[in-house]
Image (tube, rainbow, N blue to C red; front, top):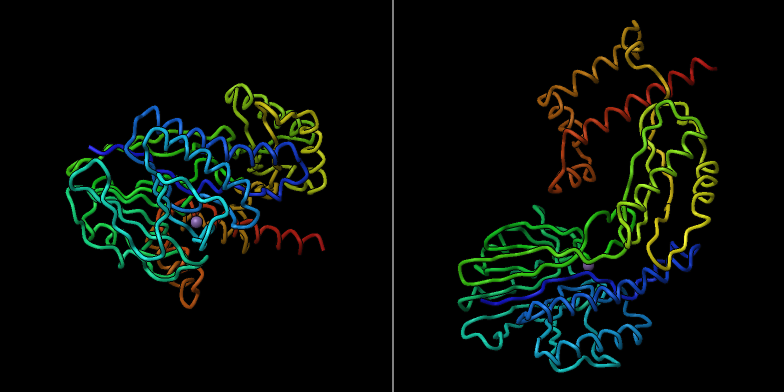
Length: 409
Ligand SMILES: [Mn+2]
């Protein structure tokens, strides 16, 4: 049995420039990417793994990396003391350079820009196969360059985009391409959300061990894996000490003061729930109500007021922003009774919401010649019910807005 850690997309050295307004939070996040690497290494040592895999984008950028490379070197040396090898591929953020200023210690293998198959030390018939990006963009399907399984156990390491379509800049490939190689485990990088695409043979995106943007919410970490020729046991281990979240607040019945109190309460609850961790939260206003008319400056004012006393050096809750996804303050039920275009339109929308055949027809009509939409619909893990519900709400609101406009004028 081979035991290993699979991580990817640590993005060390990311500058978090958008957070420039808050230098202490920015520094905390930069430091956090280093401490996460240290934590991965401690985990590898305590689990007594046979190897550590980093599936691309260890570094966020290849500029100003002397400090980052020194810190990585130090971390990898710790693994060297425990005779644990590290296998790294370069991703689109850190395609392989000719030469490093501070070369990594001898337990680290960085895969070249051609597929290499390396016997795993200490095991009779086991191989790790990997390839690095030579440039930021790799439009060809690199899976094709991997050999068929060679041993009892084969592990593949790749930075790629698995989908149904073979287009894109990050080695686009399909799940079937990966499965066809008969490896036991594919350690993938690039997608920041931890995702298990197949159980056995296993195809896994470990995801980024910490969130980087308001959309990278929820638990982030790495995988601890045990693999034999016929079985893969994998465990996701959360690591992030700063967590990004989105919280929704329904504006129905709220005025300015109510909103302020409601956001404040949300922040206090998060502080209790995530004590000892940092939380960066984006509040999203939803629903229909008076506050639909609140303007950006007012939201900014509330945000700044609620941030003023936050100290980001230890556990904290930082309000990233308040965003509005609210709807017009109208009573749809009474509008539906109207003998008018708006009334008819609302009733039609209710019908569409319940009728999947009708939805299909509308989609076919809309997709014709619309490459962007076709591409969107091709993505995996899209919940069509949710998409339609949101789309219809938006459509209703646009029509309500227009009608209001004409009435007012
Ligand atoms: Mn990437």
